[in-house]
Length: 273
Image 1: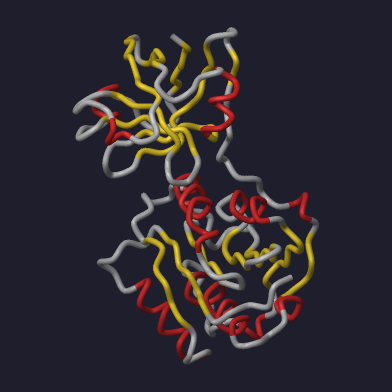
Image 2: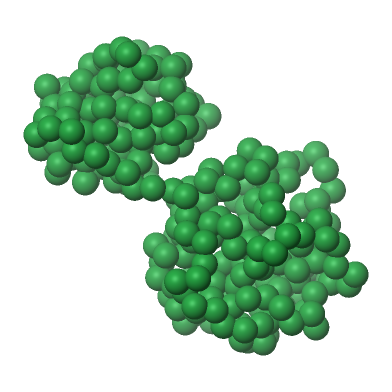
């Protein structure tokens, strides 16, 4: 277990127009004035736990060891879902027990799961609809300023937490074809697939310079297997390893999303040519 550093990184679906994020930051600074507050994003689509989980998974490892992540995409706020502090080999994850934290926490290696229940460290009164301000952020701030993880509540079994809905899905259809799914689409229209690139490359037996068929929505496209989309001809579809090691489809100076008309969760079949 790494000791926590005084960095709290925030990820929410709260947006930037309303007072929610600012009030959370104010609470943290009142408890631990020298903490550093970093915004990952507050533009997760409302209630979209899977996108929040993917964004946390893709970004957490670039932070200093000991960083405390507060992630709040919490459509079940005020219900019986547990507030959790998950301690991993190198980090701390705080948020609702709804799968939001799990992919990143498991990727780093979970060492302890603590149900946050010690009201001594809550902001009072506790709102039934804003646990980010009154439970999660105070816990993070007290943790950053030296309170031991076990002071916040009771240990839970690792097996009891809600698993992430992110699936490293791949289905081998034949010796030449696999089915994957659209895991995420970024603002450029790049289509991130539900498998690490190296695994896809190994299963299909493809290499840089090869071409593959991409089938979805009743249409077929030819894609170049390349190191990066910028080496391809303009408007050409490219299959490559993205900066987070996932397989990704992109179009040089274009949008793979618009080309193929796909959205998150859609099935895509990739075949060796």
